Length: 67
Image (cartoon, rainbow, N blue to C red; front, side, top):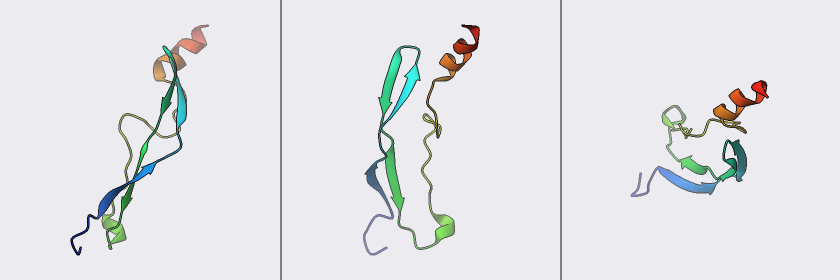
């Protein structure tokens, strides 16, 4: 549309800390803004590596009940 990109980066979400077997890890997830005029065709960014609301790695969750 008019020579502009419809999907653009929009900074990062606030950093969050994830507990892993190697210790805490700070992660910053990028924000994406879709400026498509049709709301049904808009792209919603969801990373495959970092699920929403993750605070501990799966390996750590499996280890905790054994302690």
